[in-house]
Length: 266
Figure (spheres, rainbow, N blue to C red):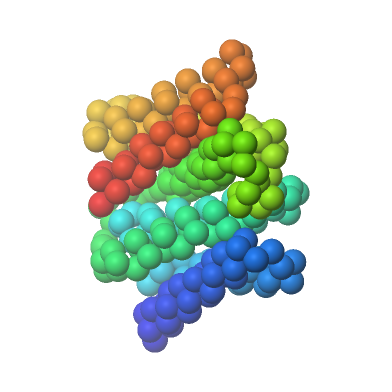
């Protein structure tokens, strides 16, 4: 019974998220405040359904559902939705929701086409460190995903301004300064969670395998991601990297995150 409910929840949340993105997209093309409110409501409903789906998977598996490719990508989508809603609660950035909801929808579609079988955990993974480490890591990727969306918006707006033809994107996207501040905020939070994810992972590795670092593919890729974002944080807060260069780095860094999630977790 729970398995059928879990399957139904996934189908419903997929439809709700798709409708939310469609509402964001229509309001972006033809700005309507009322439609944006509908889009935000649908995204919030999607978050509730995503949370219920995770709870149902936990009930079926008996552990935090975050180990298979389907579960990791889905949890990533849930983390991005959570990160955006927490950001939106304090800050308003014009049409940011459309880009974020689009990325969340893509992640959910990837999860939909991934095998959904529940695989028993290895003895080494049966630890309380699993949800802590994986949770911090995916929450980090979520905020870095928001920085990616901000970087993409920045490049679109900058291109419009440089063309000296203020048209389609100029009136629909925030100022370059607002987008730069958005990237700074998301980068700082994302990197902080990434550090927490690495620290908890190292502690867990010592507890499970008796060594702090095993040089497994996932660990190596995580280290590469950490160094890429360390460079970004250092250059932004000490040297003053901003603007186009920061936006490009946000895209490159998140590209590595996606490759890691796809190639290593799969």
